[in-house]
Length: 292
Image (tube, rainbow, N blue to C red):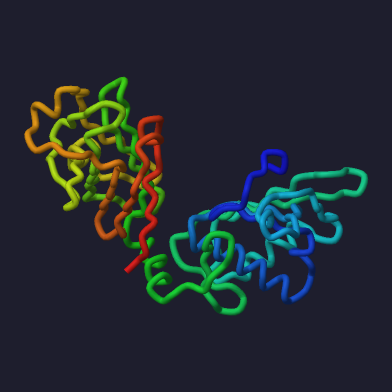
C-alpha cells in the first residue's frame, strides 16, 4: 500500500503507533474511529502506518510505524473497541508481524457496516466524511437504525455492448428481505454508437438533451432478494446507426447514465455515472445525494 500510494478513503484509515497509546484521550479516539466506520460503510483501520506531515500528502501511507506487541496487545485493543455502545458484532483484528526480533506488529482492524448506530465513549454518534469524523445529525442516526427494518442493497450497472445487454447486479448486504425492487436507468442514445434499449421510453431533460428510460424489476423467480444473496436484472439493447432517421425529433444525447434503485422502505440509491466505466465493466451505483 505504501509502494502503490493507496490513499485513505471512506473505508480506509491509517493510524500511527501512538494512536494506541494507553491514555484516556487515545482510548476515546479509538472508539470514535471504529464506531464511525461501523456507522458509515464499514472498512479497515490500519494501526502502525505513518502518514506524511505535509498537508498535500497527509492521507497517503509514508512508512511503517509498528507497535511492540508487549506494549499494545490485540486483546487490549479489542477490550477498548468493545466499550462502544452497543457492542459492534463482527469486528476482526489481524496482527501483522513486522520484526520478530523486536516483536513488533501492525494491527489491521476490519469493521463491518453495522445494522444500528453506535456511540463512542463520549456518548456521541460519529460518521466518516471524506478523511475526517463528524458527529451525526439526528436524521442520520435514525437512518442507520432503520437498517434493521429495511433492506440494504448495493448495486452495480454494466452496459455490455458485445453481448447487447444492460445488466444490473443487486446484492442484499442487510438482514431484511428486499421484497419490492425496481431499478430506473436513464441511458443516453449515444454510448459509443447509437443504442436502442428494448422496452426503453424516450424522454428529455428539459434542456433539449435526449435519453431513454429503462425500468427493470425482478421476475417471480428472482424476488425477493434474500440477505447475503444477489440477483442480476437484464434487458436487451440494439446498436442502430440509423436511429436518427427512425426517431423524429431526436436531438442531442445526454452524456451521463443516471441510475436509481428502489427497494421497499430503503432510502433510494441515486447515481450519475460516466459512460466509459459503465461500458467497461460493473460500475457501482453509489448514492451521493444528501439524505432528507
